[in-house]
Length: 313
Length: 289
Image (cartoon, rainbow over all chains, first blue to last red; front, side, top):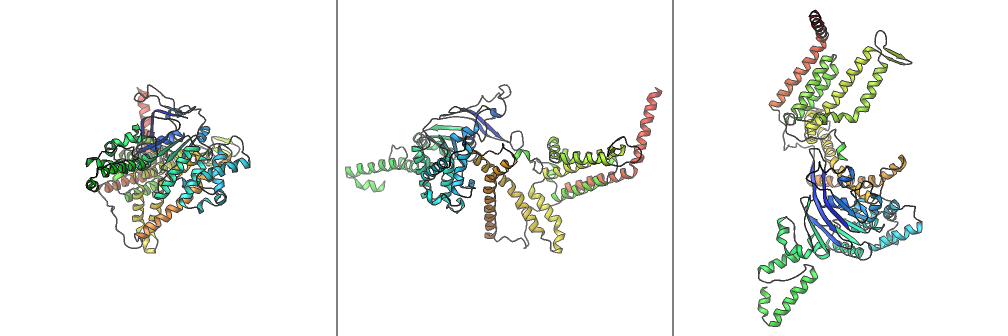
């Protein structure tokens, strides 16, 4: 399922003194199979945009008719996800939500059931056309719990509130992916975790991308995360897509990001510091590639025999 | 969701009324309500309505917003109105009599009277909350209740509880919205089904919300403890409440309004008679022409 969005606008509290324009015409295309990153400041509209993908916020034409005379300065919005046309009032939102999974920030705060099993099965039961058999339910829940890296037999009868923070988050993610969504959207999936927890969550996402959900969309503040994992990135700024490209392209022009007040990954920082001292490194900004390129440079220098300059560098 | 809560929402503009001391506004409201209930004539009621309108205009509030605040109690108003209309016993002959329902001329007058009284009452309190931030309101209340401290009434603690409760309403509302969205994304359906089904559908929202409310309460308690917060010692305020010329103006305005109402109570009948006379004279004049 491809996602095609054009001219998406959204204003919170329209017509009141508190009104604020969150999206001012977003154009974005996300292809099937991508590991897509979305970055931007708080208030840049990225969360508002991803909530559109799940019809939690509806494209305004789905609520009132698009009027080309009245809305002169905006063009007709388009939001197509696979066969779903989200600008249409009659779009089957429940079917859409089964296909587009959404993991919110701090998803562990949405846990409510008495046991882990009951919580994970919640989505499955909600989306089922007819009531699934007990065996089918159990099989699906077991699969979901195991892929997020938990021991099914161990946790299924525990209260979700007795688990540790990282485990809770895994249960919450299992509760979303249990319906086998084709697109998985995650809002800051690693927020508030320690470095090891972060790495584990990112590894989990790669595992999911490989054999569970075709497309993964991650909203993140952490540039290292983006540069390591994503195949393409969109930068949101003031309700618009400022740039959409590969992380390599993006971080090659890191001044632009810093002008927006955003951070850049550690590799880009080191690369720039090296460039200022006259050592150019051509890298794709992932950690492994960067280390390989730098050590290759070292080897070349030591081969030449002037090991004195290496120390200075 | 938040759009529906018109009553009690602060309307942020800068105006004479917004800048008036919250204590004055509270006292003003109490005096206004007293005036409304003491008022016995249509003249007085009209004066009260005019007074409220002046305040609304001074506060730069959109009239629509103030009227909308009545929406929540419209059922109550209509219900009381109808009861009064049907069961008020006037003197003389009933206009309409049907089984236990008797409508008298006085009943109709009294109903109109009561409705406008309640209407003005709700609108005036809405004007207070629309022009005063919750924090200012609790500050004002605390200051007004200070005398109760002498009988060991925990005024400060009460004000603190109130301001914390008010402070957390928007936070918890955001939280609710987030949880609702998260459960909706998991296919939860809150809009269809019978009553029992809907009540059951609320559980996935209520439990996380309760848990987060407790978590926040605990965090807030810890934070206050960490800064050695204690309500009992003498605390100073960052923003001191001070009476200004505005409050003097408000006082005179209220005094005029009250005096007017009581004057009309005493001499309203005479005034009405005078008006009727004048009207008749005018009609007679036209008749003569």
